Length: 150
Figure 1 (cartoon, rainbow, N blue to C red):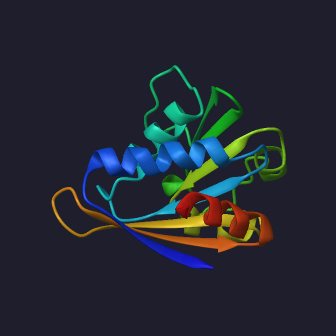
Figure 2 (cartoon, rainbow, N blue to C red; figure 1 turned 135 degrees about the vertical axis):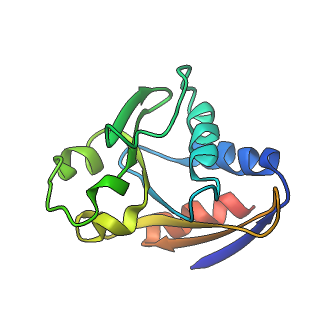
């Protein structure tokens, strides 16, 4: 199942991310793709806030992963630096533990990702406008996607 959502402003991006944060459960994986400046980190910050994370959330580009506490434990990964790497960061513990995980630049670790996940591509369509292409891979994520667009 693939859904396309047109967003006009950062506030609408935040609203979408917050709604998704209210629907996720432990072991859910969300992957984010998009060019630099597309809004991956903005989306993730609003998602974290929607999970009840109180700390400042910024891109973990230099540390690969940051972990936060909210309604659920939250793993935020930016795997951009893992291009052409065979590094295993303990993917099973990350993806199948008690946390929800957001992965930026996920295509770089495609082979290590869970088979089922919610894949989100963000494209700039204007100064503040974005197109979110949300693809649900697996039954759990199809249900999640249906709830998100209600």
